[in-house]
Length: 211
Image: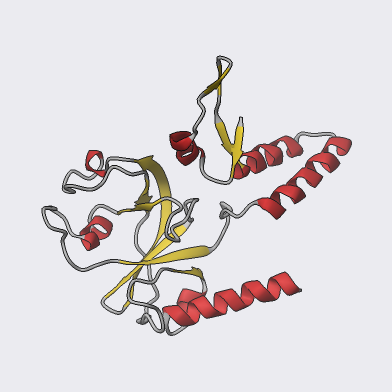
């Protein structure tokens, strides 16, 4: 087994070695080990619970991926145009197909899927979506036929839940035009701008770490 912080799907695409002396090599993520450890701990004896608890503490110290119960939202920006040759716009991929995709682990993109994705365009927050499912794809045309000419590189392709948003308008604020940020879900409902929500979320996280 190859232990990695990346998702199993991504790691399996990039494992440099597939077999060692005829034995297949498979990947497993830190998160997978954490889930298996938590399940085993529920049925373990008291002595085993202590050992598994120590393992969980260690895993939490080395993992950098989002947890399944995380309330962090990945806020992305959508261009308003339709790329040349495409039969669908960036906005309609989200609004009509409830899909979103991005490269995996490069140029600041996440290595693990977030629980929530929010989209902004026209200078304000437009919608928030729970990530219901995801898969790793290399040819987006197999999943979104209206796309043409996209490079065949690994991407997370998300299936998004129904859109929801605050009743009041949430402007972008102090974020670069193509900037992507993380915010805690509740801050997008209590702050006036996305940049304020980002700052409150980061400050809250720092305070928790220092407590």
